[in-house]
Structures are given as C-alpha cells and as structure tokens.
Image (cartoon, rainbow, N blue to C red; front, side, top):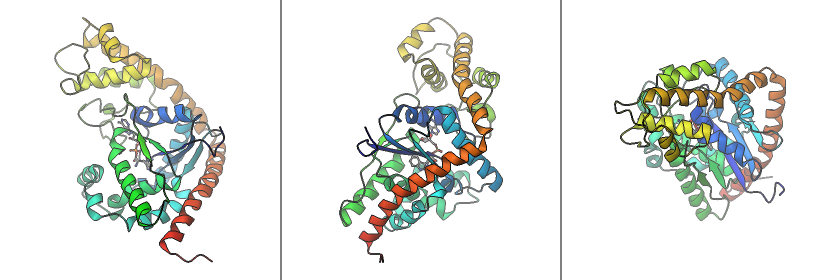
Length: 334
Ligand code: TYM
C-alpha cells in the first residue's frame, strides 16, 4: 500500500516530564504496531506543554528526549512522520478558526481542565482552557482516521469529532471524522502508590511512577513497594482490588498472558511471590527501551535531522488542510 491509500493516524505526547510506562502501554505500543498499515504522524506536543509553566531549557531537553523515546520504543522514521508541534505553525492557525466554533461550556466541562485548574490554581490560564481545541486541530489538520490514545483522552476526542462535524455541516465536507483507538489492556495504568488515580509523569512521589528510563533495579523496587490490599489473593477486580489489578495489567503487557491465566498461575501464592515476578518481568520489558534511549540520545544531530524532515512532511499535509479551511471561512487568497 502506498501513502495515498493507507488510512491515517495522528497522535502525540506532551513533553512535560519523563515518559512513563503508561505512555508506552496507552499510546506508543499501539503506535509501533500500527506503523505498517497506516500513514502515521507522531508528534511531540510542546505547545500543549506551555499551558503549565515550564523551564525553557528543560522543555527543550524534554522535547528532544521525548522524540528519542519514540524511537527507542520502536517508532521508525522511515515508516512514520515524527515532528515537533511548534515546527508546524498551521496547528495554532487552525486552533484560532476552530475556537470560533467552540462553546465556552464545551471547554469548561473537560475533566482534564477541571483537574489541572484545581491542581495549578495559581495559573489557570486561557491556554489551559482552550487546550482541547489545539488538540482537535492537531488531529483534523492531518485528516486522521484513527487516534491511538489512552482512556484519559477520550473526552478530547469527542470534542474533536463535534468540532469537525459542526464545521463540515456549516460549510461543506472539510475534515475527516476521526475515531479514537483505545487498547483493552494498558489504556489506564494507575499510580503504584494510589491505584485509584492515573499514573502521571508529574506525580511528586517518584515511587508512584515507572519512568521509561528507570534502571531495572529501580523498576523492581518501585513494584515491590506498590500499594496492594490486605486480602492476599491475586484476582482481577478493579473496583475492590485496584492495586493488584494494576500490577496484573502491567504483568499482562510484559508477558502477553491473559488475566485468568495470571490468576491461575498465582493461585494459592501470596503477594510477595506475585510482586517479585511482576517486578522481574516489567523490569525486563523496560530494559531494552531505556538502553536504546541512552544510545539514541547521544546522537543529537541525527535526532534533529529526523525531526526536521518530519516537520517538512507534516507541514505539507497540514497546510493543505489549512488552505481549504481559510478558503471556506472567506479569507482572501491572492
Ligand atoms: P499525554 O502527554 O498526557 O499522554 C500521552 C499519551 O499517553 C497516554 N497516557 C496513558 N495511558 C495509559 N495509562 C496512563 N497512566 C497514561 N498516561 C498517559 C495518554 O492517554 C495519551 O494517549 N493532549 C495529549 C497529547 C496530544 C495528543 C494530540 C494526543 C496533543 N495533541 C493529538 C492525540 C492526538 C496529552 O497531553 O497526552
């Protein structure tokens, strides 16, 4: 299949911290799997990152680290287009147009806006409020068919679809209607210290999060310290046993085993054995990624070359859509 006949994927990650195992299982593992069958655009969403205050030098470094992590996870620059969001100005240009199609109420009901504005009450800026419109622009510029994401992005995808439909209905068909693609396992990895909340790159408790550049010993220690419950049976039950279910999820991803098979394997055994085995397998699962990350990060020039080529390819496609949009809304084009 050539690029024209393949369906299109777009997805991205915000470089606001070191990537976690949640980014791998909720997003990047699917991205890697989909590279052959889809025309893929994978983006580092640096413009999203500045909705919270960032140290400029750190943001620059994390943006490149995120790109290196994409490659370390198995994204191939020969198959997929990798780029930095701020290198393609069409993203902010389309955001302005789409913001005139978005109701205030649609943005204020976003769970992530509510959570983040509560967490960072000292800086509830307009960008944090309109962030989902930027995300809709990211997706719609590339006429994406599918958007592989974790569960927390579902609501943003719904807004994206509503905006696409509203614009298409008001003018004429302009945007493709994108579908979310969410895995059954791994779409919501929980904190190791509070398994009722999502594992996050910005958690203050380092033991709560498995970072993709953690050394195997560190991964093992974090898993051994993970919060479980007092009834020592290994059973998948998210509501009553969130900690154990979260570890089972990680084990299932690392080994490919189903939940019933994992339950059978640990029948009659305590949490000590279970955690030791999860720690071993998850550490081994992360090891090649963190090793590759170190190798790729050492060649900054190659990384920059990949991202420059990616930005050029992405701009070509994005500008095509933006031109259509500008024409439809009535902007003069000489
Ligand atoms: P971000 O950077 O928070 O997360 C990137 C991707 O990783 C998934 N994810 C998780 N999946 C499972 N368990 C977790 N604990 C976990 N944490 C994160 C997220 O669901 C997401 O798929 N706004 C987006 C980035 C973005 C984007 C886009 C995504 C910008 N433009 C366009 C798709 C399409 C964000 O901040 O994701």
